[in-house]
Image (cartoon, rainbow, N blue to C red):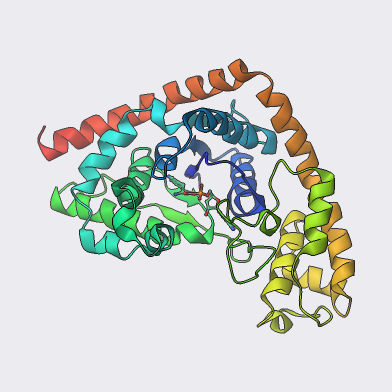
Length: 333
Ligand code: TYM
C-alpha cells in the first residue's frame, strides 16, 4: 500500500542518536520505498515554544536539514522544508485549536515533563504545541507518521482532533486520522548515564547522549563511560528484564547493525559489557562518521541548504494552502 508520510524534527541543536534511531533512520527507509510519498519538516515554529537564540536557531534549522540529507533523505524524492516558511501550518493550528479540548491537552505528559514544577511560567505555545503538530500532519493528509515513542500521545491527540473536526462539521473522512509508525524495539533510546531516562537534547550531562556531530574520540569515550550493571550479558530477551542499561546498549547495537535483538543477544550472551562496548563504539563510528562529515560539508554551503528548504517549502505550500482553504470554507469563512 502506498503511504503518505509526514514527520518533523525540532531544530533545537544537538541532534542525537535517539533522534537518528527513533526517527531519521526510519525516514530514510520509508523514502527508499518508491510507493511512498514523503515530507520531512524542520519544525522551527515548535522550537520557539522555549526561548531560542535567533542566530543559533537559524544555524540549527540549516543543521537539521543538513542532518536529514546527510542521513540519506534525498530532496529529489522527498519534500524537505522548514515549517515557518509555510503559513498554512499556523493558520490550520488556530482552527484546530478551536476543535481540540482543554481536557485533552491537560493530559499531555510531555507538557507536564517539559513545563516542570512551575507550569505557570511555561509558554502558552508549549501547551498548545500538539495542536500545531496535528496541523502539520492533517494539512498533508498524511496516512503514516514515523516517530519515537515519546510522540505517541501527540499522535493520538491528532487522531482525536481529526475525528472531532469531521464529526462536528459533518465532513466525513475530510481530515485523515494518521497511523503512527513506532518501531517496537528501538523507539525509545535511553540516556547513556541512566537507562530509565530518555536520551534527550536538553539533558545537561553531555555524556548522556551521542550527538550526530560527535567526533570518533568523543563517541568512544562516551560509550566507554556509559553506565552498565555488574552482570554478564544475557542470552535471551527475558534476561534483559530489569536491566535497562543492558537493554538500551543492546537495542542501539541491534538497530545500527540492522539485526533483531535476539540475534544480538546470541552474539553477546555470556560476554562482558566491555565486549559489547567495543563493538558498539565501532558500529556507531562507522554509521555516524560519514553522516557527521556530510553535515559539515553541507553546512559550508548555506545557500545550497537554503535553496533546498525554499524549494521544499514551495511544494509544501502548494499542498497545504489548498487544504487550509477547504478547512476555512468548511468552518464558514
Ligand atoms: P523532537 O524534535 O523532540 O524529536 C524528533 C524525533 O526524534 C524522536 N526521538 C527519539 N526517539 C527515540 N529515542 C529517543 N531518545 C528520542 N528522542 C527523540 C522523537 O520521537 C521524534 O520522532 N513534536 C515533535 C516534532 C513534530 C512532529 C510533527 C513529528 C512536530 N510536528 C509532525 C511528527 C509529525 C518533536 O518535538 O520531536
